[in-house]
Image (cartoon, rainbow, N blue to C red; front, side, top):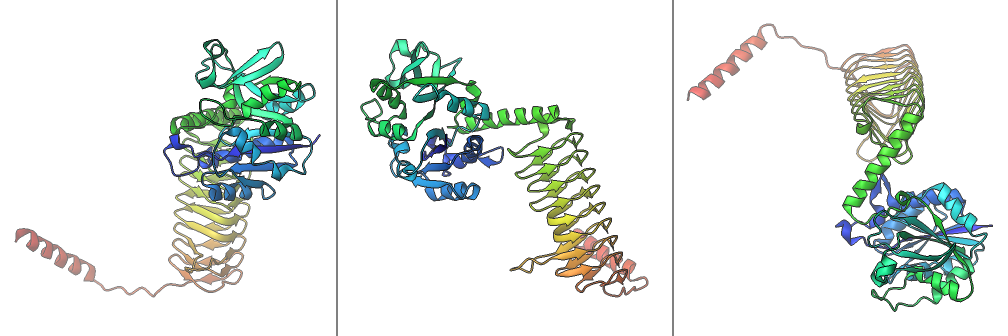
Length: 449
């Protein structure tokens, strides 16, 4: 049976104390709403509808960058969760099968839980995701009779007896599309907050003779983000889980608590990750590579046997082949380094192709930007680039060619050639000492005066 996702992402998140829409705050360097969208992919949905409100244009841009097939609808007034779901009705008018309602600020729901939710639809018309809370606090309570869910009661509307229930509502619901929107259309707002609660559809369904059931998941999967403190706690939880998973997968880390992962970081077994390494989005590291301390990587691929750092930065488009060396205070951006290439010290390599076993000396810079356009540098196999060489792109240095230290290379260098591009040295015997003596005397006179 087909399935559609409705993701509620309209809230302002005023308790975040931020002008940014709540669902765009990053967790593991990815906006919260994308965690939700990526979790939902486990169901292979035919349709994804994201309901936006506060900062609608910003949220829409992020959503469509992730999935250009997603539909974005606006909830102009935030009148409650049922009202939000109702905004998706037209976008799903031609859809069939089930609808799963998720929340853009709830990032940790697992693939297993989502599949269990769908499976429960075989025996129930409406399925709610619940959890048993150690401290139920202000969560909505799930009122059950045997294996049947009778109704959901919001904390502010609950009696003392209902508040004693520890089975709580996550807000996630699965139901047939037609039934869901029919029930949502019947929801009223006669409650303490005068809001249209999605939770009311359970009582409405039961009144119509429909069945409702509960799937229970760990409370950690239902963690919603409403404050900076909750976001920090979620980040800590994600990082702890990611570090443990990396260790279990055979990654060596001397100080795991100092390593920061992104949601999509991939690291192969027998890699070594030294302390204080930060992985941004889009990084993959093959087994047997070493990422040395205080390095920062994003949008990069590191092949087996490569060594990066310490104090290196790999930016998006950095592609390192096997046994490449990228050393201290080196930045690589949108560049391919072929097998065995070395850039060991104080260099910038951007918009470039570096051939196998080429060696770039300390202070090498590919001058790729003219203020308007980016230009490409190509360095051939086995080339040797002398220290402090400025390669003014577009330029090609051929295979096994050399450049003299301190050169500014503005023209192509043929295979095997030596290129020198610097002014002739002019040496004045004795002038250095005389000039220094004069300067010191002037300083002494100034201090004395």
